[in-house]
Image 1 (cartoon, rainbow, N blue to C red):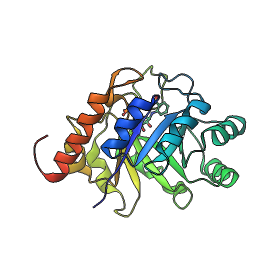
Image 2: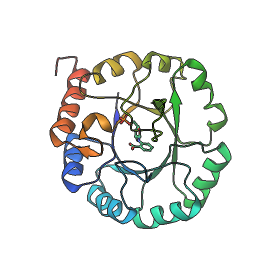
Image 3: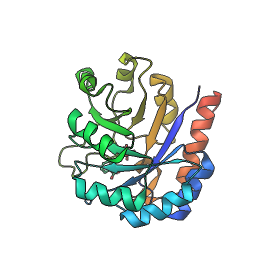
Length: 219
Ligand SMILES: O=C(O)c1ccccc1N[C@@H]1O[C@H](COP(=O)(O)O)[C@@H](O)[C@H]1O
């Protein structure tokens, strides 16, 4: 079975190249000003051009208004939007129609009931992303490097298209794949040497760990 792998929060051509060479299906750019991974839309546009034809470019936004989305879509030209805030089903539909782009809606999860919140988005969001709830006091809705009980995802409709996200790293990705069997995974801080600083060795190590887990051997 195929596995989508999204490397999120990229800011440099060097780390983008390692993500692409490792086999990333998706690369993510963060447009949330408080994040250490924030990139200006024009820089993200240059990075996405370098990825064109090799991986899909995902613009990650949090309750973004039309003016900011207009800028992101025109300067970055993403393939997909990741809505990582409190966007309603109506807002997801509106954004999709305005830009003609697919949307991935993110949800934070700590218990089974959190998965029920996707119901009104089915048939509207093209994809889902399940992340852990942010730790108390965090200013970031994602990118906190914390995980949730991946076994909860076994309750989902097996046909649901989603990415498992939150606190993944080379050490735990094999367990996540074994416990949840997701169609895709997403990682950000687990391949960083400091907040917002992607590390080429850690990115490479993550791909090796995924490959080893999928082949049923130690990394
Ligand atoms: O990474 C960020 O700074 C960020 C900011 C705002 C919204 C989403 C963000 N990142 C997303 O968070 C998850 C998990 O990240 P991590 O692997 O736990 O660090 C991932 O989906 C990113 O797209």
